[in-house]
Length: 218
Image 1: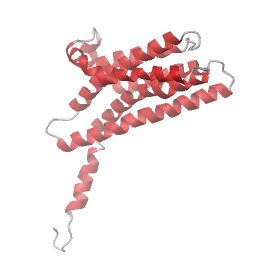
Image 2 (image 1 turned 45 degrees about the horizontal axis):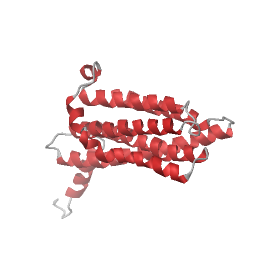
Image 3 (image 1 turned 90 degrees about the vertical axis):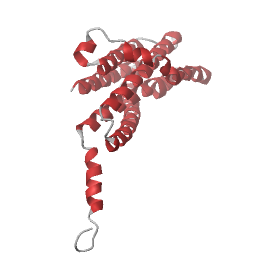
Image 4 (image 1 turned 120 degrees about the vertical axis):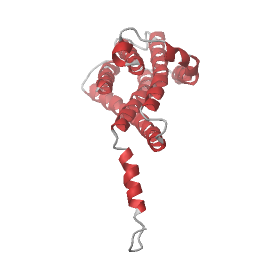
């Protein structure tokens, strides 16, 4: 308490707490959260609307939603991800980032395949690709969680708590912002007269994956 009887500890404490969120590591953690949340748009909102607008039944769309179950069992192969190195990339990028970049590449390839598929004539192919995206995303989450934890020292309890909060914000940003980009892009392409506007949208969403990887390398 100061000599004039006023408590000056609270402002200093607030400033110190707020400064944690300005740490460069928090920006990286937010990016990791965004990368984690973005694939949910692809196999959730985007896939659902794509199938619905192409005339598939609610039952079919409901069955497609079962692919989210992959996220519940990713712990089964988590030990393998910790042990297996990615050829060439691990030595250059480190173990965690090598896995993330590799799995992002898988998602990008899947989006490219989606851009040439028609769910009416090749529903099995579309769902199979969605399953691959889900597996890649669920596997990616294993590495993202580990890399996020490694960003902060085990003795930095305040930074650890802040990192957890920032990761959640990043995830929802990736999910919600990705959804906005997907829907706005699809609608714009539809109004522009593009026939396969959802397929073109997936190609554009692929650029988001590329940008996330560039940011991760920074």
